[in-house]
Length: 111
Image (cartoon, rainbow, N blue to C red; front, side):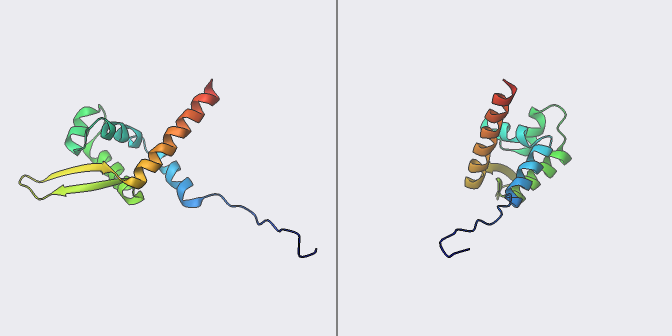
């Protein structure tokens, strides 16, 4: 082998982002939460009331997972009674764009 030859190393999959996509798609309610946020529903109580079958416990688990990934941000207002709202982060906007592209790809596959 001479010095002009290029050596290409083995490319590995993006571990963390692939796991994040898998976890979000594996969560029954994450995509629904994103729809709620896009339609202006930001408070957890309103989310539970808006979706049949969604419990507070499951919603809280879903929101926590999304916060840990950096997709959502929890905003706590210093009021009485306490008020909590959720919003999509800048990173979350990029991530949701990728999910939209995956959905378009699936539609092409199905067609």
